Length: 178
Image (cartoon, rainbow, N blue to C red; front, side):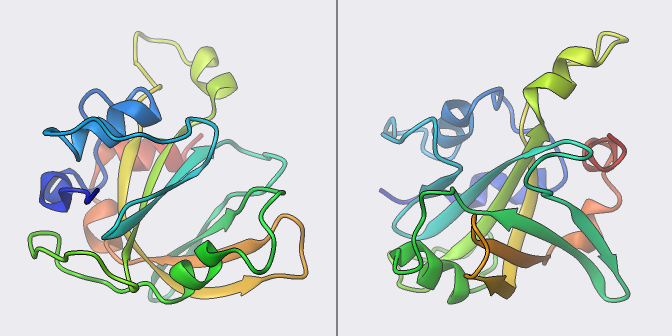
């Protein structure tokens, strides 16, 4: 099954409509067919893309963090503790390709990789002022920088390719200020 990536083009840095859950995000990019996936896994693989689903929380155990750089922003992303060094997802993440969101990709051994973030559930419950903090925010396309296979869980550092747009969006800014 392929993700219809053109559907997220105008949502960089914004909340995904109906994206309170991974299912909501997955169904948003596949409106014609309900995708099957594990709700417990933070990586969702498509034929043409890989979605990284990340909870954001200050001081979280895995240290998923955003890192400001002179040329943009990077993010650390940790795979599941059960992911072994020979898992094919490592190769897919390392070989990712940046494609325009409105360009059909088709199945590829070099998928585009997309990051979706939301406040960790324990953070979302603490928020007040009537703001719904449970929806995923589309953080755009990411590009491989480096990874550490000697660390458990395996750590990736990825560059936010759409940072120019992200930094202008309120929803993404709110995630950074948790």
